Length: 122
Image (cartoon, rainbow, N blue to C red; front, side, top):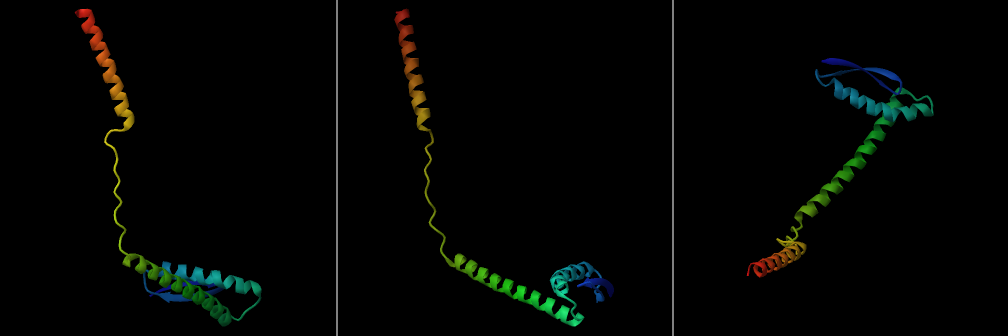
């Protein structure tokens, strides 16, 4: 077992945890300390009351998040239960109209040049 020193509400605590879990314990202690700090700022509280209040505030926040997760899971299940919309057929012209017009104009010029060459040759 590893022993970790944490600080909650300005008070030091020595806490045991399994080897390798120290960083999780430190992260949890930081979250609890963040809840305890406003309580400490309001005035001197007994240690047990400070920890109780900070724990209750975290539990309240956790309950709200669990409710939100349940709601989102419900919405997701409803969305997944809906049939997928029919695919929309989109047709894209192979040759853009501007290209057709340009090719027609080039063909007309080529024919005119061919006629000129025939007239000169003939």
